[in-house]
Structure formats: C-alpha cells, structure tokens
Image 1 (cartoon, rainbow, N blue to C red):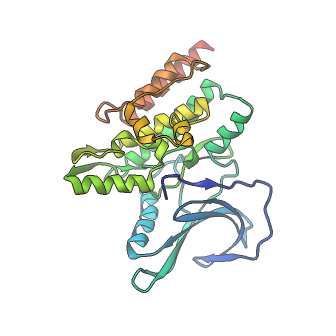
Image 2 (tube, helix red, strand yellow; image 1 turned 135 degrees about the vertical axis):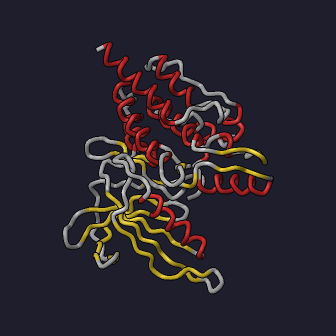
Image 3 (spheres, rainbow, N blue to C red; image 1 turned 45 degrees about the horizontal axis):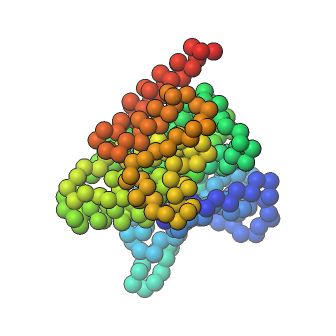
Length: 319
C-alpha cells in the first residue's frame, strides 16, 4: 500500500448487477461492487453464489516471488492473532505464478467478512458534515475495543507484531458498532534492532511505502542508524486515531492537505488541541500520553488500556 493508504469507495445500497465471478477454493463468488482500492490491491463486495451471503474479497496482484511472500504473510499474520477486534481471514487462494523475469503476475484472493457500516473514517466523515461530535463515553468504549485488538497484535506468538498502518480507515465497524482492525498487509515483526545506515534506510523506505504518512510515528520518518524500533510505533498511530475520533481529523491532516511537510510537522512535536474542544482534560491528556516524540517514553498498549479503563470508570462515577 502506498503512503496515501486506501481510497474508500463505499456505495451502500448501490449494488450493481455484475457478471464477473471468481472461484476461491471451489466456492463461486459474484462480484457486486468495488469497496476500496489501494496501490497494490483492491477490495470488492462479493456474494457467495450458493448462500448469497456478502463478503469482502481482497485481491493483491503480485509481480514477483517477493511480492507473493509479502502478500501471503498477511494470511499468516491473521492466523497468529485471536481477537474479536481484529479481522479474520475466511478463505484464500493464490492464482498464477509471479515472475519478474518473464513479466508474469499472480493474484492472491482473500475472503474477508463484510462490514456494511464501513470504516471509522466513514463514520467520522458523516458526523463531521453535521458537526456531530461523539460523546466522550462512546469514544472511550470504541477506543477500548481498538486497544484490545491492538493488544492481541502486540501479543502475537512466537514474536510480537506491529500493525504499522493503524488509522481510522483501517478500523471497520461491526453491526453492533464494535471496532475491527483490518488491512494487515503492512503488519510486521514489532521489535527491530537497527544496526547501520543500510538497515535504517531500508526500514524508512518500507515505512514510506506502507505506513500512511499522517499517522506515521516520528521514529519512522528519520530512522537512526543504531536504534531500537518496537510496537510503540502503533501507539503513536493510536493517539492519532483517538485525536481523529474527537476532532474528525488526524493532527496532521491539514498539513498534508496544504502540501506542507508532514515529516517536519510530526518531528516538531507540536500537537494542537482545539480550543473549542468539548472533551475533558483527561481525554486530552490521554491523547498526549500516546503522542510522545521519544518512543522510549511512549507507553505500551497495556498502560493505554489501563488509563482508558480508569477514564471510563471516572465518567461512570459522574453519571
């Protein structure tokens, strides 16, 4: 996925009749609509031809064996995570064989659950048009679900994983408004020891390609030649998600939209809480708690969950 992430094309209630079908492990799916498309893949709304149940089918086009291995890693990573707040792979099939030498490609088809309520980004965009802010208690409950999903990612065995592209567009909402972390294609081993300029540049290039720029942690913009990178890259992104849930946009969206340097804005360390905020100082502090510049001072997910639960209990005590 490129740094701009997914372009969502949600068209609820506008299913068109399509003759395109795809067979995945012997099951026939009828393609009904295009849901999203990114730099390396696309997601279609598909109907099981037998059960008529709707699914999201992700198709990743691979141009080399390396591409195939990266795509299949998404399947393997999904299997390592057990959480109701992280998407599950229902089925998959690799078709064709990628070979960069003879210019052939392969396609990995992944069958995923379909969430008709779309993404958290969709929901916030709808609310923004009406200037309809979510109540603080509701934000915290949804946010806690996101945290629980991220904890499962960070607790993956045999080694912890990091999502590396956590953002509101990569969080879907179930029928009961439970958050589901999706798009695990950028997920990778969380804890990396960087030894030398070549390794630092490689990670920086990978982050530029696969981590959305306005949610990217500062240490991924300028990777130090001798440093440790861990799962707290996701905690920075999580802070940006909570900010967006409160104020409809990421702290750095306006910088990107104006064409200014997002890297400079992120590395400046300035996080502006709008003066018009309707939320408590506790909520503001929770956001700032995650958006610490120094990754070694940033909390792990367990501490974020604890503070979120404390804030929920505090709000309950006010009612």
